[in-house]
Image (tube, rainbow, N blue to C red; front, side):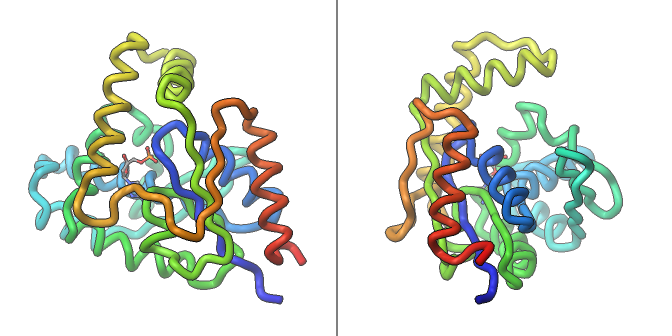
Length: 225
Ligand code: DC
């Protein structure tokens, strides 16, 4: 049986990245972080003084980029045109920029063909906002990971403190809420659960437990068979 494609969608800090990565590693699959691709485009646009509101200019930039993902121990490195952007894209303002540029249909079209190319062969776990609905609508397993906003804000705040970024819990909460709204309400490929996705609330689960749930579903659908 050919190896399957697994789509993992959900809002920010729902745990989808960590779970998707753990599932990919356990199955020996490729892991593609599509949020990192949007973040890279936002970062490079900023570097080149292209406004995040200028859809056509940002799309032109995105369409010409070459993305490479590779494992470095437990870290998934992302190189864009040979430049290692793994750490630089994690800053909070770049997350906001990624959400801002992702509302432009032409930017989404530019990244869509790259993402579909990366997912074509199967044996892949891809995470994002529109993977089950738009990027890989034929994925054998679709997961929608969610958690209560308070819990997601707490996770994001802890992560920022660990990285040495100063931010109050209230500010993190407000920024996450605003980003969620923008991602859910945009006209093209908004964050929404695919009809055939399995909904998992991670508020009360550890990352390990959530990963085990997804792995069991993946195996039941033929992964690693
Ligand atoms: O998952 P993340 O926080 O790294 O994603 C950053 C932003 O990128 C997110 O707020 C919206 C956008 N995004 C998107 O529109 N579609 C995706 N498939 C992935 C991310």
